Length: 403
Image (cartoon, rainbow, N blue to C red; front, side, top):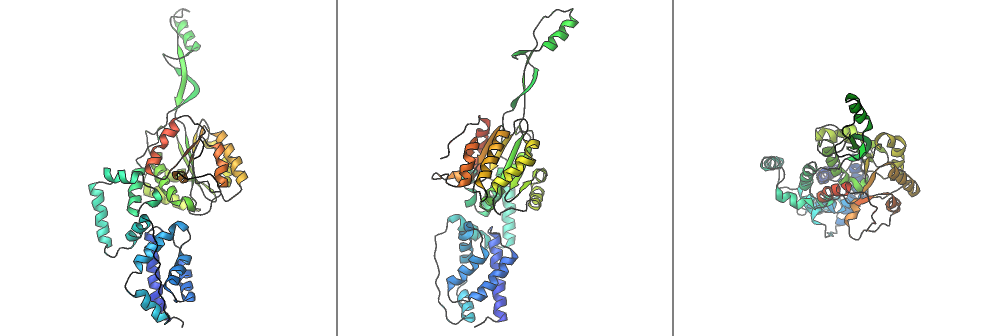
């Protein structure tokens, strides 16, 4: 029996509200997906409860990591007693209900409850937000809880607190020695020019030695950050970290150059140069068009080596490569360009959130291609892992085997 216009209108209205709840839970859904969901639900009919569940999930969810969040939002949104049964009874008399009960992680459940909580209105949420800001933006106990927690498992509130805390982190680095010599009382090389000038003023007599030693200067930091779908949560947190690092005066870096890549390479250094973090992230969103898309690491490194390496990698720069190494392009190109990048910089550090797993094994082709050319392997899944990065950069780069 085809649905009536009235019922279809109710259905479209409630599915739209359901999509808004998913968006508040951190699931990106476009307008085209909403139209596809409406058409698919009407075409599939309402023979079973789990048909409605599966049709919405197939049309609205595009990433596997959002399945559990969708399940929890669906369970909370459609929990009104007999609502789906009454709607399906109008659409189709034959009704069979099967309610799947799955065991989702606690993080997905908390994020879903935050996205759709009938007992919390906008005013109370605003008051709670103001209360948090008046008391303290982040307390010591809250910091201890979230410092070791995976960004992917954080709730919306925890992500907000973590983004504030990560801007406070610094990445100090010792200065590097240069070939230019400077005057020093404890230098190892004589300064003949200074001694001869002093001798001319004293009638040709050399009364003391003038010494020199190699000078020091801060290095440049170059960051290549993967913004593909599998890295979306981690790359967003890294943007907060890099923005704070750009405006940290005591970090010890001369300049910070930041590039993003998914399907194309984008220089976002100018966007992050804005002091206001909201304006910086807004400008970043306008410039990066391939966020949450595919991955072409080899092509991005080739573009960087061809057009940017000579501009930003001079004089002993340090490179941070932030990616999970899941290459979808030619692995041979990735190995060749990674080798060229490693030879062009003083140190190449690879930040991979997959390294947080003890059972991680380098089986993917992209990971195997990158392994021989990086100086250190670090994870970047939590605040503690990013804070420990300074230790790796301050120590000499040593090739380390992957676990």
